[in-house]
Length: 124
Image 1 (cartoon, rainbow, N blue to C red):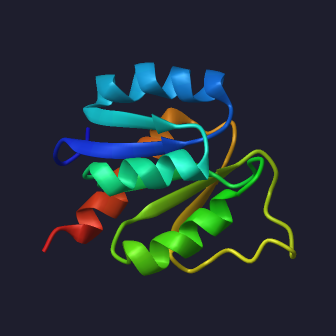
Image 2: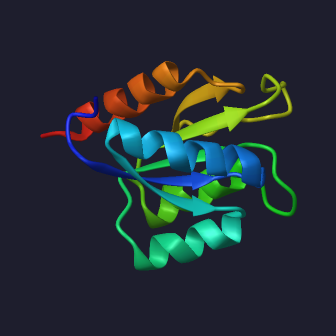
């Protein structure tokens, strides 16, 4: 269980994946805000309070790595988790702000543990 109720911004162009996590993560105590593109995610961040960003790496138009680079400047303390269906390659320069990179399909226990670790690390 999360140490406190937390709001997650889930960014992924795979609508079925997002829908499944939107149903599952609230049962674990999280509020989930879905976004299906980086642009949509940035709009959410402009209007909502988010505790953790969980984003796919490979998406059309703008990818999750670019999102992390933007967050570095706009929300430098916002923890992030990157998800990918393929292991990152040497061409994927993972920004240090991406605290974790998890492979899809991700076990919900692993995602929950990762999010809880990031939230616990932010507690003063």
